[in-house]
Image (cartoon, rainbow, N blue to C red):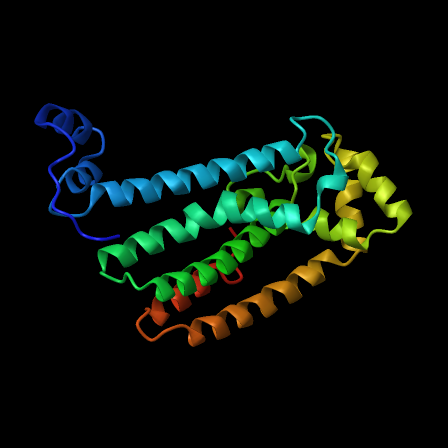
Length: 238
């Protein structure tokens, strides 16, 4: 994102109207001396597009409220949903914009940062999926409805990888339905397949792997920032 001298993008009346709603944001983004608006705007627009793609892929996977097609629930599909729906706007956007403001524009540093943040975004979403089944609603702040809604989650993808033909039949009959008994059948099958233990192993191994990757990135990048971010999400319960 190179620096260019630019005129303000809004007139005074437009700035006043928008500032009444978003004062801090508008003050910064309408001041041409603060940042290069076109570059930031293009980057944010790209993130919005990527996130919309992820949300659309997630919606398509649920089959629009009908019983989901479990054949589509592959790890490749899941990874794509996570990358576009979660990683870009939750991790990539805030950190890369902060790097831009800090004057860190080295392409190799940016590449390393995005690699770490994609891994962290995947870690975060797997946690969300686990909490969406096993977390306490009063703690996580939402109902555990991923099974009822037929979401393509890490749990169902791993379950399908491990399930016997008989167990897969149970998933096909019960997954994506709001009947409490069928929801409980899916949860019990998750337990039978050892998914809580698999998740615990995944969480520990991924945390250690991310720690190693962070230690290996360029010295010009703020290692402490990435480590603090990782510690924030490690073993989270909400």
